[in-house]
Length: 195
Image 1 (cartoon, rainbow, N blue to C red):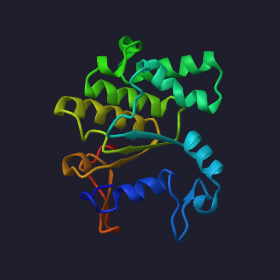
Image 2 (tube, rainbow, N blue to C red):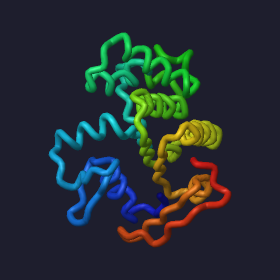
Image 3 (cartoon, rainbow, N blue to C red):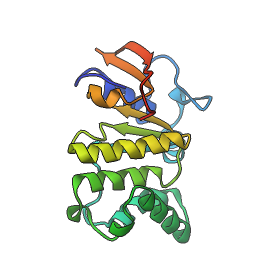
Image 4 (spheres, rainbow, N blue to C red):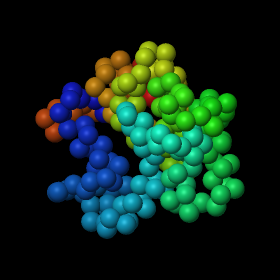
């Protein structure tokens, strides 16, 4: 999903991520109308169906990478041993096996974003919602993050990436352009790689 600042990307992301509900119309997620669900039902969907990756990482400074990845699994009630295995596997998947005990201040921006991705994928959600995941990163870190997202897409996950960067959008198989709160274009990108 591509659009300039103020175009409505964040509003759409909040609705797709069940953080907000539409004021009119219907939003079906896995065949269920989320428009009229309770806050608890929406929270359950977010916890089980959607992995969030934000531009600002949203890591807790006092926790290690492993503890940051574990946190949503604690909320979900996953037993400790399983939680540790899932968190370690997710960190290994994003190339941070050797940084599990490091705190955010001991990691680069690219490494912090990889922790955020590990946190999003630890529970194996079918949908990854990434809001400007490369917005604060250098070109090398951007490439690494895009490769991770592409790999998640190859595994069969839906990756919805919100961006204002045309180069990032060009890597996607499908582009949806937003302007003034409306979809102005929706097209397949023949050269897109899936993320």
